[in-house]
Image 1 (cartoon, rainbow, N blue to C red):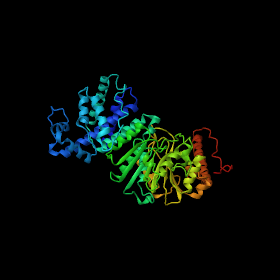
Image 2 (image 1 turned 180 degrees about the horizontal axis):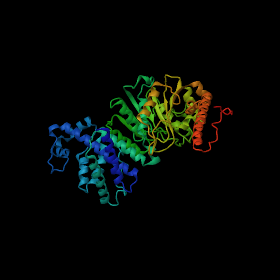
Image 3 (image 1 turned 90 degrees about the horizontal axis):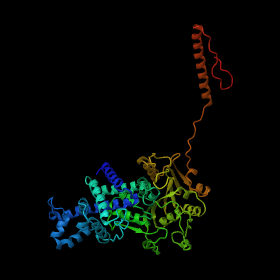
Image 4 (image 1 turned 30 degrees about the vertical axis):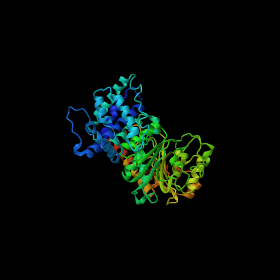
Length: 549
């Protein structure tokens, strides 16, 4: 599927959502829309694999037979079903019962069948608990099929679902069902729903273009970025993963087999489910990723709480877009937490450095971390200054990138990207001021490929450029009181052109002479006509002495 077709698919689905949601809140309708798109992907992928597995035994049904082909095969080969499903678990890592396949659900919707609502309930329950080798309990917990927003009675709810699914099926009919196409459509819809969610969008969505910058940075050689991208990352962590777009962006850049393990953490239950669906919908097998539902700051993920340094998980790359200046309540015991005790606790008013230190703690010695934060972390005093100065003195802050304002749906403030390393090659800090490099959009400012390419190339080659990038020695940063405010190191002021007084004087004299000559000619014409001449004169000599002709 071409890029234009992918965009057209996304717009088609968004138009359906916009048309059907009616009075329903956009966030609520998003959950239904994305769940059905997810079911369509799982079903088509499964049927394609089943057709390949069964070969000539895969049934071709007459037009009058409304069953899905796999349902006919199940009925005719009941004894062989367990072995077939075992084989499918090995090959595609999951099983879907014929009754729950999208083709059957769409057929029920088209027929306005009373069975649709119950079929969906059974199907969602089966996918959560039995389809996959891993258990995806609660995957559809936020899709309330009993909601009164769908209708007051069972029949009303069933009718509304029939209408929604019928329109989605119609909209999808002309498009390919391959992984990239539906995955990109899913991302497009998340972005569109984010645009309509205002500040709430920050809970689940990192704009794609910003994801592109972070993913490009962490996939370059961590110690020598100029050497280019690495071929393999054993593990990647996003501890505030939202819908998973950042992790998927890193995976896309590395290729399907370029990352050993993908781990994410998300506190919001709805967003957590979005992330799990998003991974599966992009073809990431359930054994290749893990998304944990829990509070990052409380560090309630047992897999990360291992105290034995030899067993503690560490990551090649850490990426994150945590909530900006999030208020938190650190307990007294947290001062001794292994993540914070060497640097101190972030203030209650802003957990930005708490998030940073969490991710940094789990970074490998040869790894790289890229995190999006508000500009305040660069210069705020108090506890944040102590943490910042410790990171700088220890040589862990590698690069500071200032981005334009109004890039996010959730806030218009300008943000920065901090790149951190436990072992870095250079003993200076690279500052990149990209704040003025963007295209103005209708709602948000936009970073083009050229803007992103310049940021990444500057980071990669550590190239300096007037008013854009500068490598600053640690001694200078110490002189500035460990303040990382970009404007202290990169001036964006454009010098005014110097005025050459001699040249300007000669130009004025020449102009004065030209006026006098023109006046003299004009007066000659007036005399010929018998009219009085104009008063003589010209431009005043800049020295204050009248020019002579």
